[in-house]
Amino acid sequence: MDIIKKIEQEQEKKDVTPFNVGDSVKVHCRVVEGGKERIQIFEGLVIAKAGSGVNASFTVRKISYGEGVERVFPVHSPRIAKIDVTNRGKVRRAKLHYLRNRVGKRALLVKSVAR
Image (cartoon, rainbow, N blue to C red; front, side, top):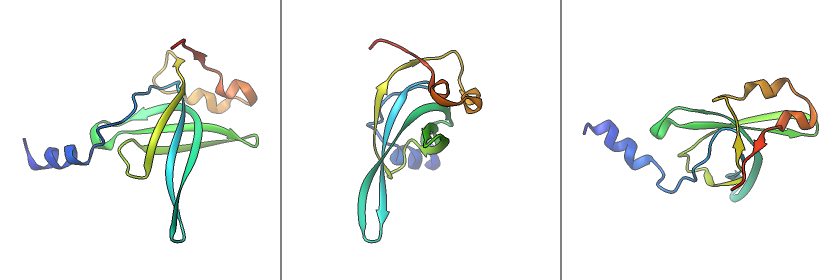
């Protein structure tokens, strides 16, 4: 095994919650304000996953005060405390960018799957 792959494997988190595109998630982020650190929760719908290995990332979209907000998170970042899957979704696309054009409840409309 070459040295780059070995270093990347050391950087990967081992306890990542499995989730897919279309799932509703709560991402617990560590935020540093001044000298204090706190956990901030970003709750929304996973609309895309990209990359592999240590470079894997995912995009979460939510509607805040009538405005769409998207945030891209690296999966293996130390800033992410944990990822909670609140609702599993059933979708037929790998990327849900078509939800950007929708307004209101239709913007987060994805069929849910029974657990």
